[in-house]
Image (cartoon, rainbow, N blue to C red; front, side, top):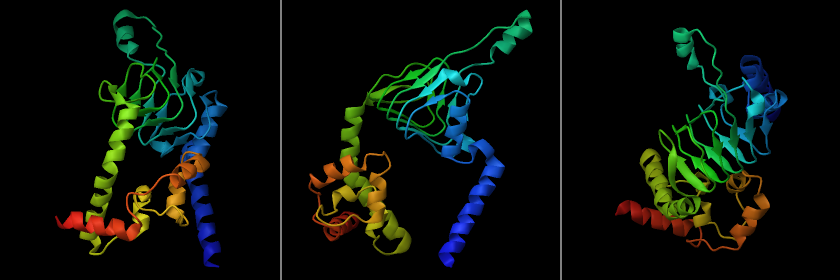
Length: 247
C-alpha cells in the first residue's frame, strides 16, 4: 500500500510539473518539443533542469545537437542577436542577425555556459561552467572561459581525472566522517567504486546505476571486469582513507 501511495504521489508530481512548466517539465518533454519545431537532436541527449535552459527557437532548424550530449543548468544557445536594435535606432534600418549552432557527439556543456550564433562544437568535448562560446571548438578537448578557449586535449583531461580519483575519494571520506562522526557506507562512493570493488562480486545498485548513464553498460562492465582495483575490497580502501585522514 505504501508503494502504491508513493507511486501515486510521483504521478501527481509529474502532472503538476507538466501543468506548471509545460514543454519544460522534464528533459524528455523538452527535447520532444524542440524536435517537433524543427531542431535536429540525436539520441541519449539530456537537458538537466530545462526550465533554467534557454535554447533559441527563433529559427529552430538552425540548431543541430548530436548523440550523447549533456546540457546542464542555465545553458543558453542563441542563433540570433538583437544588438542591431541600437543601429536601427540610429539609422532607421532593419539588419538581420543569424547563425547556426552545431554540437557534435559526446559533449558536456557545463552550467551557465552561453553558446552564441555561428558556433560549431566538435565531438568529445567538455565545455566548462560559465563559458562564453563565441567561436568554434575542435574535437577532443576541454574548453572554458570568457571567451571560451581550449584548455587541454581530452586525453590529457582523462589522465588528470584518473590521477585525482584517490585524492577526491579520500576527501569524501574526510567530509563524511566530519559531518556524521562515522565512516561512510560504500554507496557514498558510487562514482569511485572502480578503486575498490572486487571484480568477482555482484555490483551494488548504486554502482550499476552510474555505469548506465551513457547507454554503454555492456562496454563499461566489460572494461570493469578486465581491470584490477587499487584496493582489495572496501575494507582495505577504508583503512587507507582512515590513515590519510589521520595524517
